[in-house]
Length: 428
Ligand SMILES: *Cc1c(COP(=O)(O)O)cnc(C)c1O
Image 1 (cartoon, helix red, strand yellow):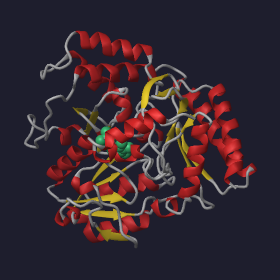
Image 2: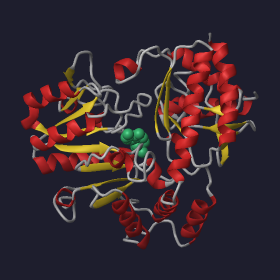
Image 3: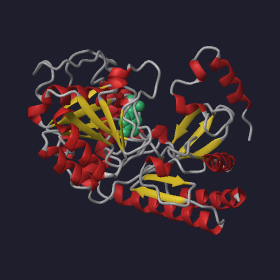
C-alpha cells in the first residue's frame, strides 16, 4: 500500500494546522500511523491521494447515508449554488426542510437550523436552562454532545461525580454545573434526581450511544428517563445528531417510542454539508429569539446549499424499503464480523442498531463507558490497519461507530467479510 503522498501532505499540514488535522480523531493517534488524505469519494468508496481505494464505513462520521456523491444530492447542491450560496435572509429551502423535519419527527413541532451538532446541543441546553430557570444539567459518561464548555465533561470513577472538565480552558465553575452518570444506569439517575432534581434543567442523552462505540439503550432506560424527567419538571433532550434519520426516518425516538422535549440533529440532516438543528415542543421553542428572549443566531444558518442537500437526502430516505435494505446489509456485516472473530478465537463483542455498528475487542458485553473502555485498543489498531491493507476503511478508533449507507450492497459486505476473516486470524 503506497502512502507517500498522504505522509508528505500530513508533514506539511503539521506546519500550519495544530496536529495536522481540523478535528482530532482524524489524526490516527489511537491506531498509530499517518492519516490518509482523501481525494475523492463515490458511492461506498473513498480514494486517497496515493490512489488507493477503500470501502468506506466511516462515511464522514455518519452523514453520507446515501453513499458519497449521490447524483440527486449533487445536482441539488450545484443547481442551488448557481442561484447564490448565501443570502442571510429567509429562503424557500429552509422552510421546506423545517417542514420535512417536523413531519418526520413528530416531537419536533418547531425547529431552528444551525451549522453543526455542537451548536445544536449548546443552544438546546441554553434553551432548557431558560425554560426551567435552572442551571444544572445531567449527561451520561461516554456520551459526546459536541465540544461546548459545559458538555466537555465525563465522570471520574464512582456512580456519579460532580463534573471536572475534560479539557483545559473549561472553567471548573462551568463543569460544576454538569452531573454525569453511567449510561444505562437508571438507579443512579433516580438517586441523583432525588438529590438534585430541583436544580436540574435537563437530562441530555444519546438515545443510542455512538461515541464510545455503539452502545444501545437497555429496553426500559429511555422510557424511565422520560417518566423521571416529567415527574420532576426536567426537560429531556435527545441528542440525535448521530441517530436522527439514521436508525429510522423518525430517529431513535420513533424507533423506541419515547418522546423527548427537545431534539438535537446534525450529520445526516445536511447530506454531507455543514448543518445542525434543534427542535421540539412548541411552547419551549417559542422562547427563542425573536419569538422569545433566548438569544441564538447564525450568519450562515439555514444556508441554502446545505439545506438543499439535506432536503434531497431526507426525501430519498423517505422512499419505501430504504431502511429495510440497510437493515439487511448491516445485519449481514455485523453477524459476519462476529463469526469471523469467533472462528479466529478472538474475544469480540458486536453491537448494532440498524446501520450503526460497534465492534469491541473485549470478552464482556458493552453496556456503558466502563465496559467499553475494557476493550483492547491495541488489538483494534491491528484490526484497523489490517483491514486498511485489504481495502476497507473503518474508523481509526475503537470507540467510533461503523456506518453503512444505501450504497453498501451484499457484494461489498461479502468482500469486507473475506478481508475480516483474514485479518481476525492474524490477530491471534
Ligand atoms: C457528532 C456529534 C455531535 C457533534 O456534532 P458536530 O457537527 O461535530 O459539531 C454531537 N452529538 C453527537 C451525538 C454526535 O455524534
